[in-house]
Length: 300
Image (tube, rainbow, N blue to C red; front, side, top):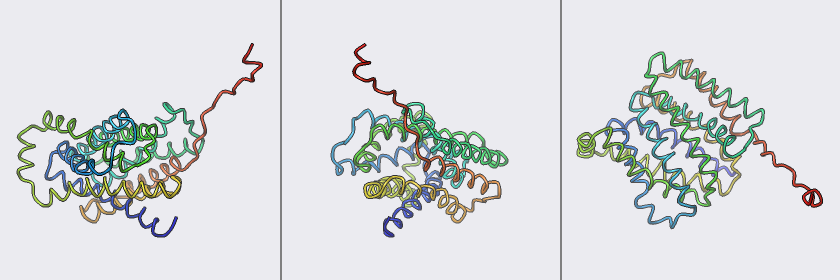
């Protein structure tokens, strides 16, 4: 990769890592489900009028919109609102690579090789260490919600692989149109009309800035830059840069939110990042295809 493209990949990883700090700040202004709905509303408008028509079937857009937008981000925002630290959330979410590999093996017949299975085991050990660390002083339910968010991210990854969009920005913008109404409905149901109206009435520059960051900078510009890199370089060259996301997430949370990062959390980080690296970068074993019978055998 060219040095400028490497710098762009690192910048995207930094944007996505700092995004967890911005989410933490936004949750001080909005209920979590309303905040998530606003994120996708602002990401979709006005971009949906500028990117052209969808390049994949609507069933994939709706599937990814529900699994990624409603389930993954809904669970993540609620988990962080319930006390899951921003830095730890950025780390734990990386276990999505393990869930992606598991779901790909189940539904896409992608048999994991030995290195990938080893990586999955190491990453899950890291989740165990992180759970012990968080369970010692934090809400366990919030931790579980973020792990479930990672599982939903794995589902959306498999659906995205099946959709195979030619234009990742176009796909992400159209996906962003799907979660808005379901998340608003869930917010009204569980967070209440009064709480939502109160949050919107008290909107200030800081609150608006968090929505703009998570919607336009992290989602629209982040995925646009990522899609540009994937169009110019093999995925195997671009994907490893996502391992920098928890590095930026944990460091920015420590610097800006004064989150403590103890030895146990560093151990969890080392296991998770190392396991995800093995899981993500190991070659997939191709699906076993039964041999095609010769013409004379087929005629029997």
